Length: 366
Image (cartoon, rainbow, N blue to C red; front, side):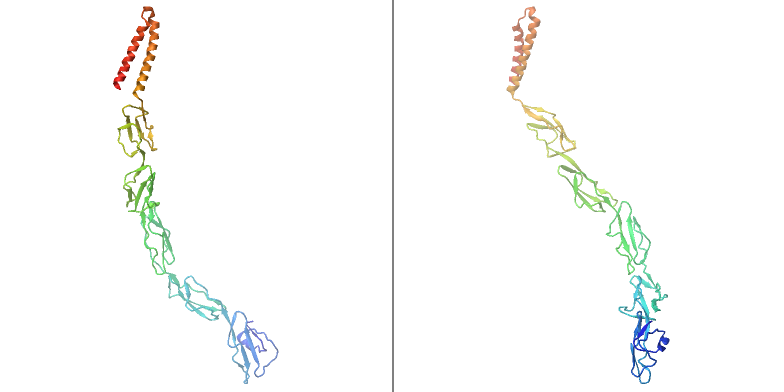
């Protein structure tokens, strides 16, 4: 039932408009100025006045209304939009709407772009728009791309070959609504890997470097630079000049009362540098006179010492040794020569004379 009569009304109109009615009263006729009020059922919309009156000519005034079927909101499309404003519209049976292509799509004029409300539903919308083509963006040297779709909305992703890195900020290009590719040209460039220089630090440290980028190398404390401190990434992915080295150093060892016999006195020494010392007059060396700078930054063996021994002490030591030797020799002489008649005093005199000669030589040296 598409509309409802709230006053008594003839079924003649139901037959004309194929509308089922429900009578609110009984009676076969209506008198002058009798009124009938109509209301459409859900899913239908009234065309005409909802109230009519029986006039003096035995006619209903105004004309009897119609309850027309309606369609819901028109369908949405991924490629097109309505040309008409569809806000709060009511679409009755027979209504026709037209679509237009969205940005990024172009019209195919041979295909219908409209839909019609028929029997409370919309006819199908034909695919009258096709995506715009941006054309082939071309290959990227030293890169592979993900697909070969060149129409609006398509994205092409690029992957650089091993040993190459992308110089651009993005790794894809997208076909835009105006038929052009986004993000400009993709470039895969040869790169230099971060140089490995033990015991050092860099300025502008990165994972990889592009041609003409410069790295400055600084050695850690206790190490000295061997080579150029600035190196540049070349067009073939090599550092020029070659990365430097940070060599371990040994500080000059201060050895009191000694002079450098081999080598030169300076602030720092490299690995395998050798120094040799000799003590000044009156001093005696203790330890090895020659030392080498090791890979740990230490002198091996440990630097020597120059120890002072005074002359009287030296003489006393010599005399003590001589006396000890004389006594030992005298005892031996006494035991072996007593039978031949030689006296103990003769043996002692011989040793005493030897000791005096040794002491005289010590005095002369002093």
